[in-house]
Picture 1 (cartoon, helix red, strand yellow):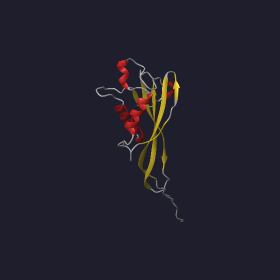
Picture 2: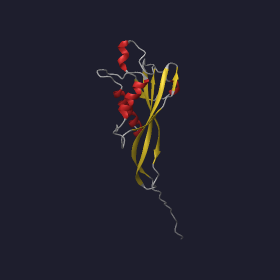
Picture 3: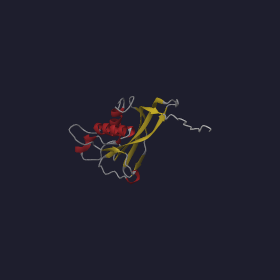
Picture 4: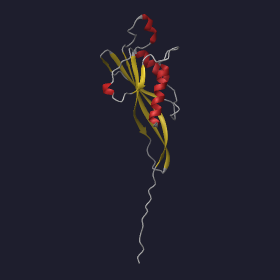
Length: 168
């Protein structure tokens, strides 16, 4: 698996653990990597979902050496969707779930702030949280986070192998 794929999986696992209540085996909302066919995705979980996707990287200026350590920041987005804004729209027994979008935002923020994934060269920094939209009974918020990365980069050395025939 690629370094980006490993980091995405680590974020999904971290969020899944943060959104799992004590004594439960599954998170209180669906937690997953962004679907391959996002336009066809339909949220089926009764409370909501959290989805992670790699958004891109910003690289330090290239030094043009044959082998170098390249530092860059990888940006991931955590998309949160909930059927409720503040409180669960459920019977009193489910009120303690904390599945309103505000609760999900806070739980994810706490889980990510200062966390240093094994695949990263530094602690996670949160970039922003923004209201996205209210569509068909669901509230959406993307949370953007940065993770410092480093990778050893090798440049292929170019060799000119010219063969000249000696004159006879």
